[in-house]
Image (cartoon, rainbow, N blue to C red; front, side, top):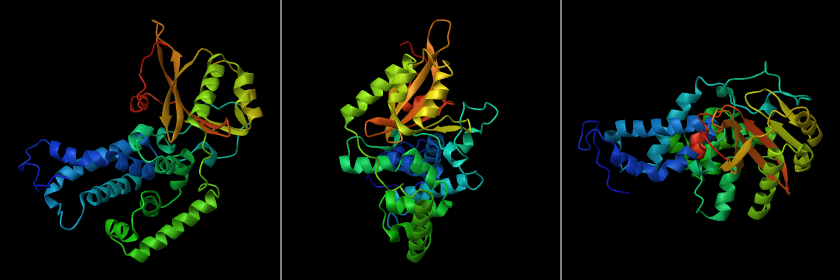
Length: 337
């Protein structure tokens, strides 16, 4: 890292924080991933990281390189930003956390605002695809929707401790310094956090069974083809027997291939929709487009996050409020297939 020059807003760097941004950029992905796990929303995580950069710039004259590494200082600021954002926030969740499975289609009267849902995150914002394959696989598991939802059950400081220790592999004394507590306090918080996660989701620590890239791509192609043709029989055959589907913002979800098939067969609302693949939460996602303009162009309708294992789709989460989401996933807001 280039030598830091402690200056205030009107100091030697003038009003342009370009130098701070240059020091900050190598840590952006890691910080976004940290804030996402803390907050449960990709949109909020990006806001938190921008606020972290702003606070770092505003307080640069107070940074002492002799007492703290630049990375640790940034994580301290990011943690405080997240804790501030979480003070007044309600817990984010998935539909499966809110009630039993449904039998029919979604109830339009039963919805929750965006702020109550665990929202997706683009892989490209938090993962380095050129990293070590084993490390990359482990990092993918820690941004799965189920893991992010489970984290939301932890008190904010326990959440920070668990993410820093178990996900980012910080040492206990480093976490203690960041949070301004003792090492025994960090170890105690970590034990409580692990116990809470184990009680709520006993299988959460199990890695997602890997599928070869070619097998995964074939499954996605077959799924998209069947969906675009509204071939419900083929589509349902690609689902696991106990597959789950949900559709935020509806407080509604289905469990089982049979239940999903019945609901899909009862409506052809998605007939004619088209898809562009992307990646979210360590897995494949699909930008779903629907024809809407007079010129025949397709516009954003949903972002579908797919979980797959053993050659079938095990879970789909279809996010309907996507106008702000699509750009972060590299998806156009207008498309002509």
